[in-house]
Length: 490
Image 1 (cartoon, rainbow, N blue to C red):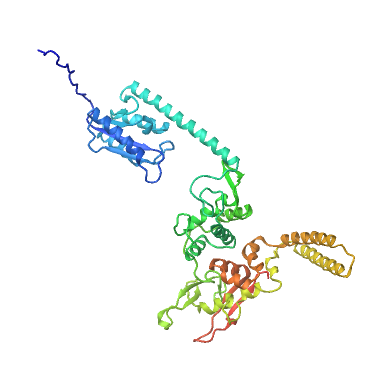
Image 2 (image 1 turned 90 degrees about the vertical axis):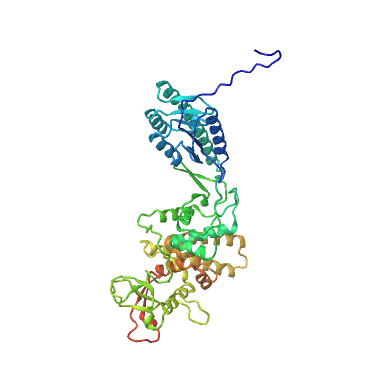
């Protein structure tokens, strides 16, 4: 019996679920570093649906943060979920959207077949319930999946078209800051740009990636992330076309509108060197001594080079570095310091080493000449004739009080331009890369002394062949004549 005015309450219906082994899966494709808000929101919604449907989860929560499914990238939690399905631990998967589970055709087809085989359904917070044990459920899952794939592919096409437009217009690339440039990539940071140029010069001069990285780290120059350099980081930088004001897209190179730090020729030379199949790819340890692997053993006299080592403590001179033969018989052991001073020394009050002596000669520019050119004699004659013409023109102008200064300067400029072109043809590109800045320096000795070890080694290898002979029995004063020096095309 109901009393007058008493409210009528509908009976409370308890939702009965056929699912007893539920699992949730959340995924977001892109997330800022440490940002998990997206997958947390998905998790809250899937958990709410599970409670509403009275589906026990019992810790079966699977979550991939910042993992794209479009390109089939590794998704460890998804793989764990599929393994749990195949073990019979799951009978329904709860997701926010079906597209969070699969977004490429291959993975979707494989996943649907696994769920069909093991009688697993899919519940979507924003979408239908899919019974994949039925043909209708699989059809609907396939159709919804195709819609997801269409949206992703269409978005990708728009992004690619936008990217191509940006590249064609020469706009600055987006992404992490590039060492040498400001955060937006539009301006050069002078101090970093100077280091970039040094890296390109060093690789052209024969330095190794490990040697360049070691030099940067020794001078406490950190990379864009504030960390020490590795040989791989140096390699990536040197092969980045952005430093030459270029950008490659789908195999085509476009000119950029941001300031270049090095020339296109410098960049291409570095890429060519680093991709040369004959180049040693193992990073290995950086060389620590001037002549290791360069100087030859005069006892073997078969081209075998020497290596450096620490003298045995039995001699009583522990810590003294020596050069010794690389061969199996250690028949040569010479103290390294006096030999290095003979070749490269710049110590005040002591004679200059042989290399700086060559660099300060009046005819030091001859070190850059390519003596292997078949037309070298012809080019040398042309250069000599142009220099003689310049002298004649200068003498004539000095003796002619009525000579026109403007005409004289214009004529001299034309002759100098022709001479510069002849000298460019006479110059060896390899020698210019290794020696050019030294020969053109106003203070060649200071420039040589400031070079990192890798550059000095490249200069020595370019200029001379060094052969180390025995010094004779017993301890005796260093004899420079025991070091044989043969110039290379100087």
